[in-house]
Image (tube, each protein chain N blue to C red):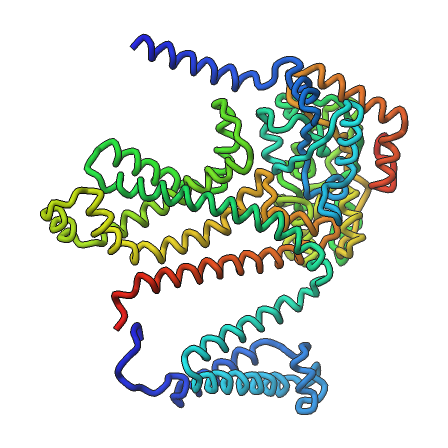
Length: 277
Length: 324
């Protein structure tokens, strides 16, 4: 009896310890340097930030930034592509070390993640079908709006957005939708919008770069109004490894100083998004 | 008729009332749609003049022409022998599908360029994830069925709890629970094993019920007779019960295999680069995802057809006793 009790206790304690403290101080950095590879989680469906290129390899702004950070840490970079909700659920348990996937640092997310550095800002905008009569955002009052589920765009449409990261420009809610539809990603939202003005959606809130990309690909949509907010986007790691955090912050600072970030932004967006305008 | 009949009867599609009804229904259906903007209307131009201004007469003429073609087609197929009938109907349905996809204006060069990667990475991953899961699920199912039929309280309780739980939760949720939940207990498993575990447990639960019902469909007298001859449990199962139960078990099990093949796409949410994941990802940048989705759909279909063929072979093997 006593034997079993003690053993069960130890096992419970071990489970607790493993569950409660996934990363000891410096543990992630130690693992990265000893393995020589930095495992980076990113989305494979979020062009031009990260996507599959013609050679069936991951490519894009986020991917290039992650590779640059790897160069600064002196390690190889390896990518994994779990779903967005899997990444934001936290508890990475060592499956990957860092997330470079244009995550907006919010207070709620900061409870789960540590944001070592903001590496660029994206203007978020509203897109409508090209037949739409809406001239300003006020014309979309009481309409149906689509956005990627659990994204800041959805939060903005639902008026639940909090941008409390350092350097986040202030914004106001200019959109009063009747209904907000959630989508797997922005492309599925654009696909519903392209069916026609008001068929399934009247408007989509998304990042300006992906709206412009869709227009370039021949989607019958257009931007309406000015960008609704500028979203700071940060690199995320789990709490509990200040050494790794400091290394990433240094790397991003160096990339900002020597113009690498601006150059990458110009390469992928045609504009420098590494500073707020 | 369920079995080849010995009573000679006239072919249904040659009976005048059937042909007339069919003609009428097709005529009405195609009159109900305005087809004046289609290529078919262009073909009818000599008869109806400018399609867009032909009005009700145009609609009638188009509907009439389609009804004639349709009815003639069905009546002619009725003359063919059975095997040829099946082949022709398959071919015609397939052509309709191709015509449907043709309207999407897909970029064939893009598909051709991406197909090798879709197969070497996507199909291979899908196949090995499903194949391993099928094997594990079958093992679980046999054990579960025996446990559910046993008079041992513990075995029954565990097995019935298991089937109830895993049949009662959406598979997608099980994938999430296993992938995100197990690390909380200290077991960090990667995406592929987590997916295989979820698929095996879920399909094991369904197949437990299939196996149990198959075994139960065998008359109780078979069991009693076997036991009275001194056969033990294992021998009775192996030589008496299972050989009779298998013909009952195989069709629904084949169903499970096919649906497992497609449900393996759910593991794409945890970042496994299988067929569905690539289908959603590859064409994204250039907004050519319809191309990839349709290619993946076709690949899934071909794989399912292979499983169907294997199933029908096995069924034929076990139907030997019914051949006259």
